[in-house]
Amino acid sequence: MTVVALLSVAPVREGSMSGEVAKAVDALDAYDVRYETNPMGTVIEADDVDTLFAAAKAAHEAVDGDRVSTVLKIDDKRTVETTADEKVAAVEEHLGHEARSER
Image (cartoon, rainbow, N blue to C red; front, side):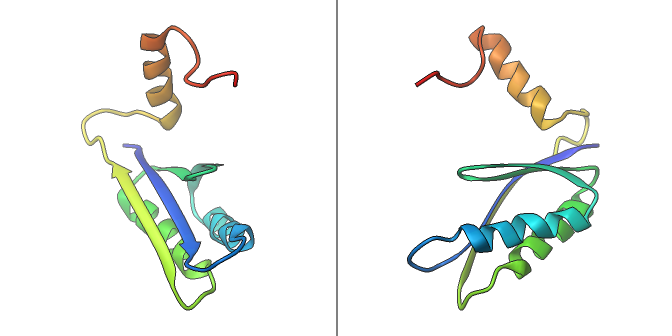
């Protein structure tokens, strides 16, 4: 089974958060997960939910700050094997083009 999730971890503060976000993303490398970071979060794929939760916890704990905000949205399809790329490809098939604009 593949579990797909969207993870967003950031300190709650003014100014740039990119250094702390980088720490959260770097923490994922210690786990058997695949991930891709975008401007709004990081999509993570894991073979099981325990690995996903452990990786998300490590990312959360990697961020320094008096207050850290973490959002985790999980898609745990238990009867079908799928990947994040396959989910995007299915939408693009309906669109007839890539799910992005050229603007």
